[in-house]
Length: 359
Ligand SMILES: Nc1ncnc2c1ncn2[C@@H]1O[C@H](COP(=O)(O)OP(=O)(O)OP(=O)(O)O)[C@@H](O)[C@H]1O
Ligand SMILES: [Mg+2]
Image (cartoon, rainbow, N blue to C red; front, side, top):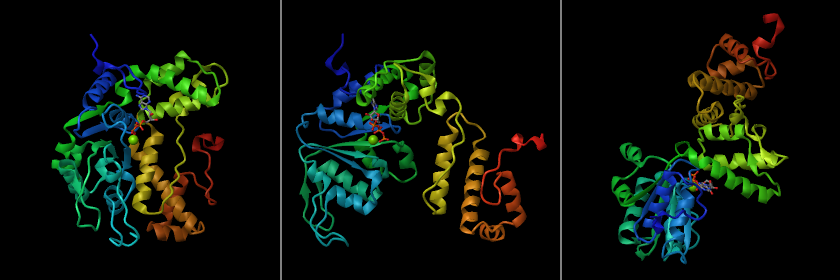
């Protein structure tokens, strides 16, 4: 016998046991007042579930306010959430209402709650427990009636261990956790998700791609999906846009799925060394794909190459200057350039194996 709690959620595609469990919990918690914590990797559908909770709750006619806590600095986030009074900090030119006040009688969705500071977490705990807070720079206490829905893509227990997340707030939030499993753990949902997105993007692009070849589907089912449903959605959209006939085939899939992941050129948008390295490592990991081995050499090699290229460029390609700036011996630089097959002008040379005289 199916109960009303077992119905699928509108807009949430999937029939795996895992997704049915998510739907059941979502329907159970939606009518209540308690905070909800949604846990899942990037692209797994946390925002979709947050919205469903609001829409299925008695607060559905009230406001639904979303704040991405990861997108703002600590002080901006505090004033965004709680508001401020005129003159409370440089730039506070007027009184301002915060998002909690805006969410009165409705729900507030705090995305990436793991990136809030411990100071802000104290304030969140109080608003959660007492419904009370003060605007930044104000002494008057405000009352608000809103339902808190939070999401995290990190394991909060790890964050507690490393001192970045308050345990008391965690227990308040974790009353009813909803765990969204990564797509690779519910591969049986892939075909219906593909079908759903095929229809959506065919309609949007005035195409009529109706099926997926057996080989393309096999690749889609076997992929590891580090970007989860969002990644799948992007690939299907790409396939629909690139495809001509009624069938999506392997040729319309991106290189990672065709088994020919070429090492992507790495480009960074920052010159801060720590940020640059982190960005290069991230891009390198993404480019290498989940199955790659000898990651250490591959990524350190890529980071090293980018560093040398940037410093050479900043020294007008004068090697002796670049070596001094890098703090390495000129011969070492010379050897590295040969190893990376970079010529004097910074052009890439063909790999050694392609040169007939070296065979
Ligand atoms: N089960 C699903 N059915 C249909 N669409 C889905 C499903 N899960 C995710 N999507 C779609 O995939 C995209 C990513 O989902 P969503 O934004 O909810 O992920 P998220 O977990 O919030 O990701 P992030 O952590 O990166 O913010 C959205 O366009 C969403 O509509
Ligand atoms: Mg999200």
